[in-house]
Length: 314
Image 1 (cartoon, helix red, strand yellow):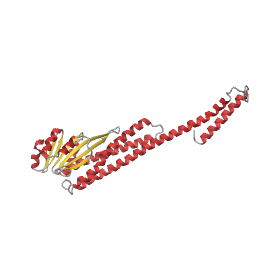
Image 2 (image 1 turned 180 degrees about the vertical axis):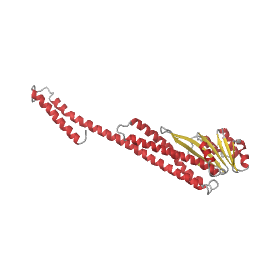
Image 3 (image 1 turned 90 degrees about the horizontal axis):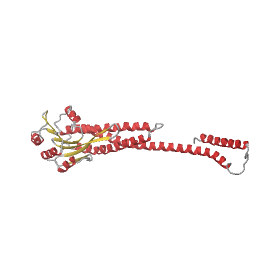
Image 4 (image 1 turned 60 degrees about the horizontal axis):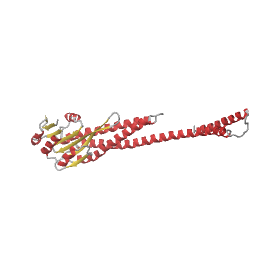
């Protein structure tokens, strides 16, 4: 169901018909319209004279976060995000039409309940579109920061696993790839917000002097989230390199041990192989010949083992 609100003279009128939007706004006030389907969007588009390109963008999914300026209104596309327990990123698209006296939201899974609660508890009167827009963007950006913090915690957990004595390499790689994919998706959502929050407050009719500090606070949060995601990208790249270096070092240690044992085993193999020729040799057919070859094997093999241990090859 579509939802409507009209803020006028300190009172709130809710759930009036969409085809009466222009009529209600003629009497003054600020309206919020939440669109539920394409048919409702067409009605609101006619009532407010929204541009056809903006209407088309709102109907298409997976738009890049952006701010488009039109003659009578602005079109804003943003994403609410959250990180699931397994590290996957969940994105919910939110498109907004911003006119001098109306905020229209077209959402794809974005929860507006937190926004309406923020409006109801706002210390600022909701008789300005800038106040309504501020609450929406503030909740969106807070979600970006929470998602970034969650990914940071997951990366720290991966660090602990990397330095375990016997980590589950396959599970580690699976979680690492999942976190990297979530971080890449988060960066695509967060970084364009810097341009949006830089351009949006320049409209003095939308963001007046009283609202400038509030939008400036959101801009600081956006910068923080963007810098944090960049830091996490470097962090997880370094984590991956560390994992590969540890695996390479372990492989080198294994190769050293295998090579050392091969050298130790090569001595008795050479001696027994040499005396295995079908020709007489010193001590042939004598007990002392057997003990002499056995002593040579033990002495030379033991000497090699001691030398390899001293060089930390075994």
